[in-house]
Amino acid sequence: MAKAKTVKSVKARSEKLPKITVKEYKKIIFLGSEAAPFIATGGLADVLGSLPKELAKKDNLDISVILPLYGNISDEYKKQFRFLTNFYVSVGWRSQYAGVFFFEYQKVKFYFIDNEYYFKREGNIYGFYDDGERFAFFSRAALDTIARLNIYPDILHCNDWQTAASIIYLKGMYYGDDKFRRIKTVFTIHNIEYQGKFGMETYSDLFGFPDSIMSFVEYDGLVNLMKGAIEMTDIVSTVSPTYAGEIKYPFFAHGLDPVICRNERKLVGILNGIDIDYYDPKTDKSIFAKYSAADISGKATCKAELQKMLGLPERNDVPVIAVISRLVSHKGLDLIKDIAERLLSEDVQLVILGKGEIGYENYFRYIAESYQGKCAAIIAYNQDLSRKIYSGADLFLMPSKAEPCGLSQMIASRYGTVPIVRETGGLNDSIKAIVGDMGNGFTFHDYNSNDMLYVVKQAIDAYRNKDEWGKIVRRVMKTDFSWKKQAEKYEEMYNK
Image 1 (cartoon, one colour):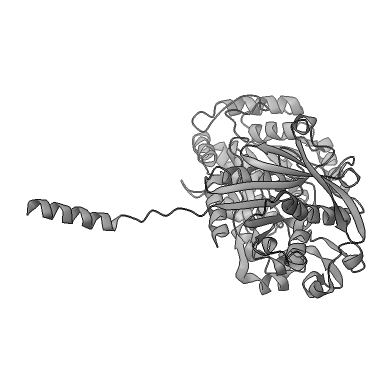
Image 2: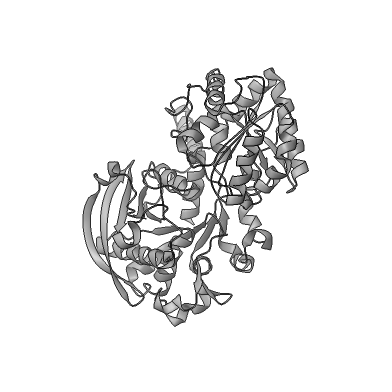
């Protein structure tokens, strides 16, 4: 009897155990115009360099990325690329050569589309008169590569307007092929301001779209590639939950708010992460001294060496406030211009690094010249110097008018430089106001320079209390901005 009772009790307990489920195996291909470490001009490259890598750690996911083979990709990587095949791609009435090269990097399969006319150019990778044609070619070449190599994915994940045409081609022209018809699509909006708008004369002559899908692609008398992708994709994602809500409104949507609202049922917002191995003050070779949340003493050395490098007095008692940004209006630089001289009347040092609109460049040069010993402005893109500033500054100012996600506030946090941000987009989702022992930064809501200056002064006052400031720095450094948690959310989205 006792034996029977024991068996019964074990059975009862086993029935309460959770069921073990095996996740379905999925093939996912990302399309993008840039990805670190191969080619990078902004946040998109960081995302496509780190999110696929994190997803590839999962045994049930097969991850690939398709990119253009730009001429300015480093030879360090190019010499490792392996040629696979070549073919010709229809671009409107044209037929253009496409070569395909392959490289596996950190468990991610990378395919590079080669066409020297489109992609072997000097300088930046964007901003050419024929960008529409270049990325129309890339979008079709990516689909043709999938067919040629028989690497049909379960999910095609496209990013921003440069790959939006891939979804339009897939749903509007390749759907007769059963293998393409089974592919589900995700379109991620990293910045809704840049939509891929072209004159209607390009509709058939350049893009080669059929008349049957014109209602999806035409908007305000123009071809709008982002609009077409939003209408035709299975899921629309953005890079933060707050931004997903904001783009339903005209102030943020740059004219696409009716389209977003019409497609709200398929809209998802997932906050970006950063590569915490790449941004790590314990191992970063660019910074003056190594440190960690457990031992932040090396940060003082980073600060002193930064001050010396930039010609600022080497003072540990004065807070260094950093701005690392593209110098464009939506980054909130008008607010900084409005209060710069009032801020510099305080006992602070201000460091600006970035390039952009000539008006902002000239203004920050003027301020640095007028306030020598208190302000330094470096009008450049310089990744090595940005690391030195992230590690050497005390406060990081990012007052964006609109910010889909923002990575700079996360990188600054990783280096113990406490963010001051406006509560918009991903800044709102990643930085919470410091109240007592809670929070990881200083925040303000309204787009108002006086509100911003008030919060900056709060941060300066907090810095003066050295015991409490050390606790704040450690807490900020411990904020989890890794991709691990965010990758789980992407997998949930794919499982839909």
